[in-house]
Image: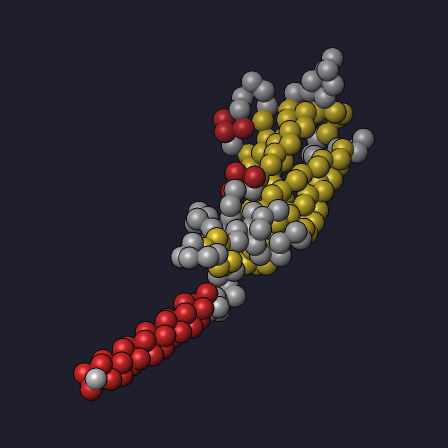
Length: 191
């Protein structure tokens, strides 16, 4: 009988140790799931080790309005259509390029930055405007289907990082929608 009593005490002791180990391992795994991620990482923790990073996506729009005097009004918008906030020092730039067909824009080589807006934060779902005007010099009328004109100008809005480095993975989910161009044809006065 004495040998059985000795066996029960260690068996109870083992059971108590097992239960204590099980409870402590559960609290450690719950602590891992509840750990706080840095706010600049913007991560959603999923069960296990998989995590999904919220990614911003800047998208631009560009509308050109032409007056009878050759004044071009550029109404542009930069929007964050992604799932995360954007927070990189950047610029929204509008460029104008000139062409005299059949020469291309590169062959003519005239390019001018019309306006710039510096920004650093665009919250998810937010937008901001970039508006400016450009007066076409020596303007003599807009091109039509019958008279396409003897000159054309390409207005391009683009978003770039201020340091001009390319976007890294996770900084902008789709950098392909960060620029848009609109071309206008017109008649230039001959000297």
